[in-house]
Length: 176
Image (cartoon, rainbow, N blue to C red; front, side, top):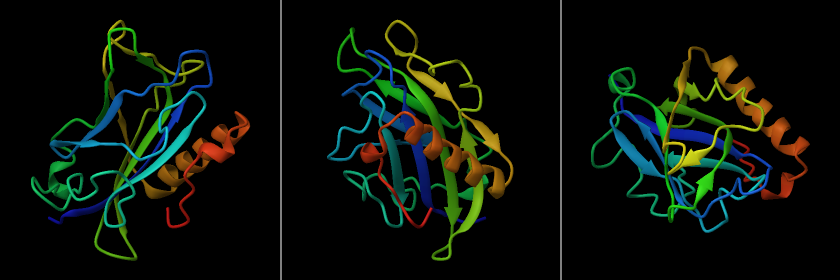
C-alpha cells in the first residue's frame, strides 16, 4: 500500500442566523484526526473553506496535521476507519451548521494520484445539519468511488458557495 500524501477538502457553512462558529473543527480519516484551522474566520456564516493537509498544507500547525507524519495514514487504512468531521464548540451555546463537506485523499507527489473521496452526501437537508451540544458533534461522510464525481462535487460546492453571495470568503486553490 501507499502513504496518503495530501488531503484536499472543502467545507461550506450555511448562510442562516447563528450558523457560524469559532469552535474547533476536525477531520477524521485513516485512523486519526486533523485540526482544520487557519488564521481566517474559517467557519463563519456563509463561508467556504478549502483546506490542504500534507504536501502543500495551508492550515495552522501544518506539520502536526500532516498525514505523512506521526501516525501515517496509509491508503490501506482508508476503508477500515470511519471518515467524519467533528465539531468542538467553544461553550454549551455554540452551534455550527455545515452545509456541505468533501474530502479527497491523494498519494504520490505532483501530479498527485487520486485514491478516494468522501462527502456529506446526505446533507440534502435544506440549510445543512446543525452540530453542537444540542445536536451531536460528529457528521460521518460517505465514500465517493470515482474521481470525476469527487471533482464534480467540489465544483458544485464552489457554485453553491458563490450563489450564497460570499465568493470573497473562499480560499481558492488552483491545483485542486
